[in-house]
Amino acid sequence: MAFSEAFKPKGSKHLSIIVDADGKEVQVEAREDVEQKVKLEEIINILYAAGYFRARIKGISAFDKIIIKKERKEGEICVSQIFNQLQKVVGIEEQYRNVSCWRKKHSIEDETQKLEEQLNEANSRLEKSQMANSEDKLASEVLRKLQKLVTANENLKQQELAFREQCKAELASLQNAIREVEEVEGDTDQERAGERQAIDQLLERVTVARLAVGKRTRAVAALQRQLDQVPSRTELAQYQRRFMELYALVAAKHGETKKFYTLYNCLNDKHNYLKKELNILNSIQDSYTEAMASPAAMEQFMTQFESILHGIQQNKRKVEQKLNDEKRQRDQLSTRLLALIELQRQIRKK
Image 1 (tube, rainbow, N blue to C red):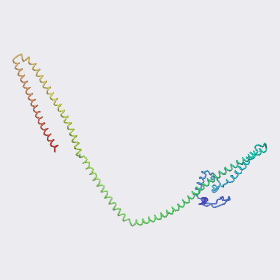
Image 2 (tube, rainbow, N blue to C red):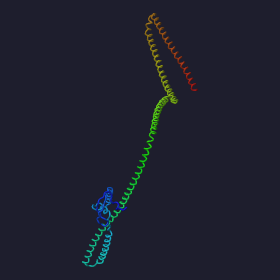
Image 3 (cartoon, rainbow, N blue to C red):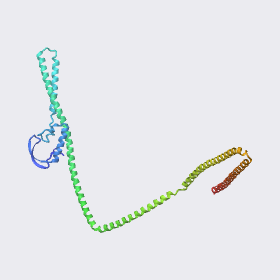
Image 4 (cartoon, helix red, strand yellow):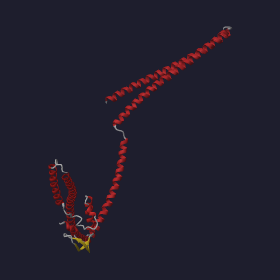
C-alpha cells in the first residue's frame, strides 16, 4: 500500500486545495474522517518527537510535510571546487614566498581571504545539506513506520469485518438453536412437572432420613460417653495401687497416732497413781504422830490403813483385769491377722 493512500479521503465530502507533485495547486474533493484525522495527528506527533519540526508548520499540506527535496550533491561539488582552488593558491604562495613584491603578496592574501570566505560558505552549505540528509533519513524511517501502521490498520479493519461476519453467523445459529429449544420445551413441560414432583418427594425422604440419622448419632454419642465413664482394667489396677498406697499411709499414720494416744494414757495413769500414792503417803505421815498418842487412835489409824490397802488392791485387780482383756484382744487380732494373711496368700496363688 502506498503512503499516499493513508491520506485517501473518507467520510463527509468537501472541496479543498492541495499541491500536486509538479508544484501546482489543484482543487480536489476531500472527505473528512474523524478516525483518519486522529491517525494523522498521531503521525505528526511521532515526526515532531523524532526532531522533524517541519511537520508542525501551518499552511503546508500533509504530503508536503513529509516529502523533502534532496540537495546535498550541489554542496559537495562546491566544496570540492573550493578545496582545489585553495590548493592552487597555497602552491602559488609557496612559490613566491621569497620574492619581495608587495603588490603580489597583497593580491594573494586577498585571494586567500576570499577563498576562505567561500570555503566557510561551502562548509555552511555542506552542514545544511548534511542536516537535510539526516532529515531525509529520519523522514524515510518515519515513512516506513507510517507504512507499517497503515498496513496494520488495514489488516485490523479486514479482521474486524471478518469478525463481524463470524459473529453474525454465530448469532443466527444461536437464534436457531433457541427456537428449537423453545419448541422442544413446549412438549416437555409435563415431563418436567413429574420430575419436579419426584424430586420433591426424594428431598422429603432425605430430610426425614437426616433427622433419623441425627437422632441415632446423638444416642450413640450418649452411649459412648457412658462407656468412657467406665474405667478399664488398667485404670482399675492403677486406682487399686493408689488406694493401697493411701491405705498403707493412713494405717501407718493411724498406728503412730494410736501409739501416741496409748503412751499418753499410760503416762497419765501413771501420773494419777503417783499422785494418789503421794497423797496417801502424806496422809499417813500427817496422821501417824496423832495415832501414836493413844491406843484408840492407833487402832483407828490401822483400820484406815487397811481400808486404803484394800482400795489399792482393788485398783490393782482392775488394772490387771484390763491388762488381761487387752492381751486377749491382742491375741484375737493377731489370730485374725494371720488368717487374713493366709487368705491373701491363697488368693494370690489362684
